[in-house]
Every structure is written in structure tokens, then in C-alpha cells.
Image (cartoon, rainbow, N blue to C red; front, side, top):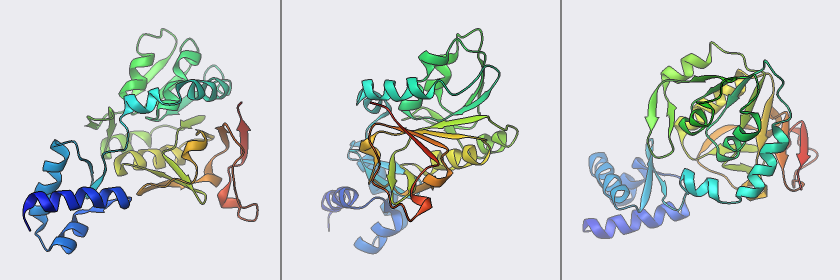
Length: 247
């Protein structure tokens, strides 16, 4: 099989599988791991897939700018509602989601300490005279502009947040999932180090799943969303502790 045919087939695999691993490619096409990795590099250079640790996902997953633009008014409504929770003096974890980034305009003049791994959120608060901004260090994810890795995870151990504000890529059967393992690990640590977990997720994130687990809905104290959720009342893991539906 020539390389271009194989590349087309790998691209097709990313459209039907949540994650195509290097091992999947090796097993399917009987090629070496080096060949599989070169194929993924070429496909990403051509804009046909997005590489993740150990494999690839479909390039139809939107960029940060595209995600922020989509449903912008709704995200702003959820962010405005959630922004009423923190009080002056609180310490906040804020993740790399676009919904959480929308909170900046509502709390930028508050006396808060904000810890984040997102360059977008850091920029939004960088000129505030009242916010104490702490940007975690680590490796930079150039596409979505957040830092990750052991340095960021170790730094989070030094903080105990009053609130963790997070978005969601996908929620399905009570499980919260993300596109990138690196980002998922940061969010897992933030959940563990926060007294209250607040999620902003509209209906488009429901019944959607991605390759990497972040946590369970039962770990979320308040979910801000725009519709009632279809959940199994007999399964406490399928629902957050409280839901605020914002119209």
C-alpha cells in the first residue's frame, strides 16, 4: 500500500474513532511505530488530523478561537451566572475552556487570586490592579495556548482553591471527558485541590465523549447549563450535586 492511500485511511479512522493510536495504525497497516508516527506528522502538517499523546483525533475538533466564537452569547450568559459565586478574597482555579474565559469581564475588577494554566485567561486578567494572577509553568500547548506537564501538576499541590471553574468537551453517562490527555490531567488535579467545582456546559456537550477522562459529574458541585439534563435518577454518579439552568 502506498503512503497516500494509507494516509487517507488513517484520516478516515479518526472520523469514526474517538482516538486513533499509533498501535492502531501499526496493527491495521502492518507498519512500524516510526512509520506510523511519520504518517501522523504528515497528516497534521496537511491539516487533516490533530495529534495527541500516543495518536491522533479528527481535525474537525475546533480550535480555541472557533470554540469561543460558537454559541458566544450563551457562553457569556453561563459565565455571568457563575461569576456571582466567588467572594472577594477567594482563590480560584480557572481552566482553559472558552466558557470559563468569558467569566473574565465579570470578575476582572474583583479582589481575587486566580490560578490558571491558560494563557488566554492570564491575558484577560493581566492588567487588573485587583486580581493576583498566578500562571502555572510547564510545557506550552501551542495550538490551544495552555501549559501542562509535571511542573504545572506539582505547582497545583501548593494551592487549595475555594472554587474551580471548568468547562467540558463532552459529558456522557455521568463521565466528563476531554480531547487532550495533558489538559485532562491538569483538570483532574484542579478538581482534587478545590473545595467547590463549578462547571459551565451547554446542551451541545451532553451525550458526547472524547478519549480522556477528567472525572464524574458527581464531583461537580454546581453545573451551569441551558437545558435540563437527561440523567438516570437511580445513578447518583450521573448527575452533579446542583444544577442551575440559565435561560
